[in-house]
Structures are given as structure tokens and as C-alpha cells.
Image 1: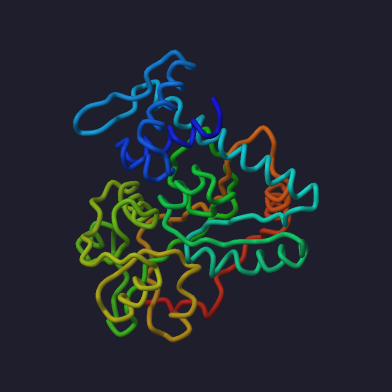
Image 2 (image 1 turned 45 degrees about the vertical axis):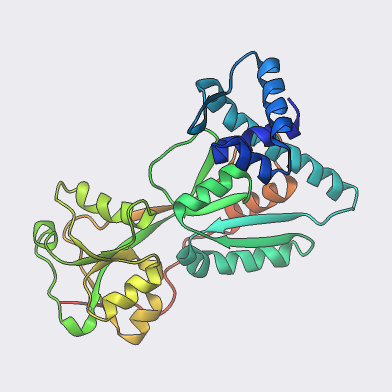
Length: 307
């Protein structure tokens, strides 16, 4: 197996079509087929099932996919490490995170990390939780900061950074009363992110753990900042990380209502790919996170409590 064959193999996986895969990697379709055939002969297994609808990986092809991604990522890291050691390239590291975490929790620490390591390039990429995991798996980011969904993947290492409280908020002008129970709250209109987002998962989990049906979602929005503004405008209630509410609390736009029962929390974690050899830049960042990431209160004004 060589890197070129593995890149060709992954292109076919992505597209499920030989013609589109060949176009992506600038190969004639016959050359692409030759590479796949050579890879199958070397491994002694058929990697794809071909039909008029396209191609799909066999169980053997599905098994190879994760290894191919890891081999190519390690190959790129090795080249980068050699260039950096030879003084031919600047070391850099890419951090992926949710927008709220970046603004409220990571900015002070990343600023400190940059000052402590002036020769190290730093990139911050914002994305959704699913997008971050896909980028981490593909080697597009080195480490991801997100909220834990309880899903475990042996390809990734995980470290818990902090436990972040979630708060129930309503528009301050509604003069909403504290809910007597979760059952009463389950009929209230809520604003949340779309299904599949980690924030939506936290919302549904808070009700599920109490054995109560989740409240109806009247509006979906793709950012916590937008959800808070909708709540401030009177569109409904929301369950959001406390660290995101500071600016709206300062304006008096929203109030915090006591959660009926054990207050829900979310585990903020950092994740990175397991490797036999850890890139020096990533090792520096992981050590800094362990040394410097101290629990902090949400910035901005404290929320005004109802009742």
C-alpha cells in the first residue's frame, strides 16, 4: 500500500462513483481502476462492490477506511515534523471548537498559549459538533473542544476540561414564573438547535434523565447566540450553557429560571486522535491545556433570577 493508492481508495469511498473520484484526484478512470485493482490484489480482498448505481465498500473496504485515513494523516505529520526539524517549515496547530466555547472559554487561554509559544502557528476553526468530529477524523484539525455526548471512539483520546452548568432562560419582559415541575415545563415552547447538534442532545437528555417527554421545539436556530436573542424577544424558553448568557444578562434581556430538579450540566472535553508518535506542537498544546485551563465563572453580568 502506498499513499497514492490510499488517496485513490478514499476518493472512491467519498464519491461512491469512479468517474467523480477520478476527476477529484486528476486521474483517468482507467488509471484509478488499475490502482484499486492493485490494492485489492496486494490485500487479497475485494474492496468495492460495483453496480449500475455506483460503488460501495465491502466489509473489507470499510475496515480499510479508518486505517487509510490514519496512515495518510501520519504520513503528512511525519513530513511536517521533518521539515520543521530541518528549519524548513513553521510548526502549526489547528484547534476546532464550537462558537460559544471559542468566545467564552478558549480565547484567554489561546492568547496565553500564543504568547508562550511565539514560533508556533495557531489556527482556530469554528464548526458544529458533528463537523468537528469529521474534521478530527480526517486530520483537518489537531484537537477539538466540544461538549461530551457520551459517545466513545477508540481512535480518539479525550480529556475532561470542566463541567459547565446549563441554565433555563426566558425573556425578561415575560415575567415568567419559575416552573413547578419538569412535567409543567414539558408543555412550554422551546427554542433549540437542530437534531444532531450537541446542544439539542443536551436539551433532550435533561428531560430524558427525569423521565419526562421533552418540551416542544417551536423554533430551531443554528447558533446559541441567535437562540438567546430569540428568547429575549419572547419567542420561547431555552436551555443553554451559562457561559453563553453573559452579554444578554448585562443588558437585562433574559432572566434565569430555576430548573425543577437537579440542575443539568455539560462536560466540556477536548479530543484528539490517538497516535504512536505525538506531534510536538500538539504535545505542547495538550500540556498547556492541562496546566492552564482552570475553571472560570461565565463572563459578564450575573443573570437576574426570576421569583
